[in-house]
Image 1 (tube, rainbow, N blue to C red):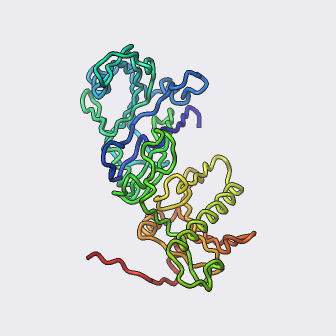
Image 2: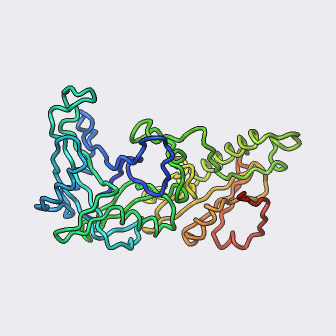
Image 3: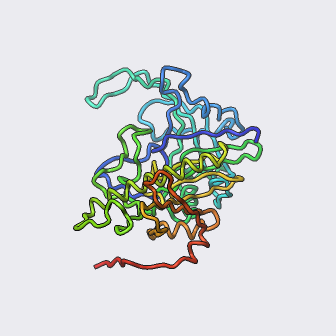
Length: 358
């Protein structure tokens, strides 16, 4: 499509539906630096180009500019404000009456006040960021901007899952903003279990290694050649095998899909970055998002478990969902079968455990 712009934002900068279990701080940054490097070739020209599109507000009201500046502790200039009426969620119309807003903010103070009260040179002078505050709200002069309401509508429409915004698309012909999102777990998921990579804000919001992450991979002791015949099999050994099977199975299916799909499909290995996601991979097909779940075993029987979160997700996205079952995952040539939601619901089911709340 002509007159289309697509850009990623910092991975840890815009998300909703998590529970902040950190003792202090660790919140979304709600901005992406655009000219942080002295090397201009590394500037985010893809985002800076947004100023050339018709979502850029000409002569914005002074009160709207003031609202953009209000949360800053240093001098700044609002270079551009972008307001969006028509909003899509991963290519589908978002049900909302609110507008979403972003803006370019440029630092203008030559000096800053340090924590000890002394003055220092502002090394960020001239730095520009794209801001998209979660709580940004402006309802005056004909505007109905409410970023938080838009994000809440996203969570309602996606089935009540916590999500992260990975980027945006803007279509100038239809004046439409498309949110590119990934689901990162159930609503209320502890923030310390969400982000795996040291990307975006360095060590900020990294997964707590002491928190248990259950990827729900299949391990059947009597099927597993490494565990078969063993006595006193420890949970540690089972979990190690489970994790190995899962990684091998996902790698196998990811490479398989890379060969089958085109580059336009934008295959993304979601669970590699967000281990609590209710699915493993996602891609685009004919403008529609498709979801992939991978189950793996080193045995030869296609038996798999599903968590309640995975089951809820599958039921919500039943027509866009495929499960790949990989058997003999540690063999030179693993085998696999793929199942739709409707195939899975016809399968024999067992309930080997029940959770009780005392």
